[in-house]
Image (cartoon, rainbow, N blue to C red; front, side, top):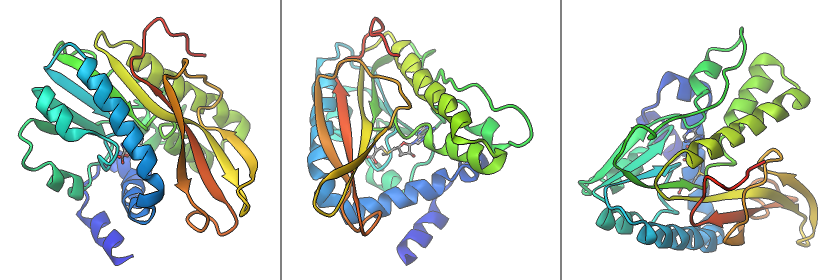
Length: 266
Ligand SMILES: C[S@@+](CC[C@H](N)C(=O)[O-])C[C@H]1O[C@@H](n2cnc3c(N)ncnc32)[C@H](O)[C@@H]1O
């Protein structure tokens, strides 16, 4: 608890990132990773392998963009740094632990950006109409040769939806289409790149009782279906006792080595 408090204090965050709870979320992720390392290991290794393969297949060697870099636990960072002249880590918050880890990697940059394009507008609500989700980060940079969306797509709607529910009194019925818009906008953003784009993300959350029996499944992407995955696997996100004493949470993860602009996403 003390370590989390200290890390929170040492982490710099934009006012909108604080308003939407992103700084707190980053510290929570760090703390949970510390407790769940073993359960997460297969998922993290799978993600690193898929991203490393996709990056190796990309023909260019200039700039790699990493969307949702977070703790870097699922990123083959050294492989990217060897191949690309610039590796740009994009997230709403960069923990000091992450900045420390990359301090000797001269070609790594940390960029604070909101990939929903809506966080700043949502931070000033109410009153008013919520901003339309959509982000163009990186699209104007002709040196981009590789992009990865790194276990972030299902995370993007969480804070916006929570904001609309708590500050604007939106009901589940109202927030559903907004969450869907956020997910669709992220895929549209990725599909607008000319460079190869790799996507790893979770598409479903299952809840399991103490006997390991699934009693509920939730769509993590608000009804948006990602294109046919190259690979899928389970991610034991929260073993029994982590989130709740009575149930565990398991994510179904999809991996697409190269997203095409011709892929239909509905
Ligand atoms: C489940 S983590 C991804 C795992 C991460 N690659 C790692 O190794 O820790 C989701 C990441 O998405 C980031 N994130 C959430 N909403 C975001 C947004 N609107 N824009 C950019 N990053 C966001 C979080 O800060 C977090 O680092």
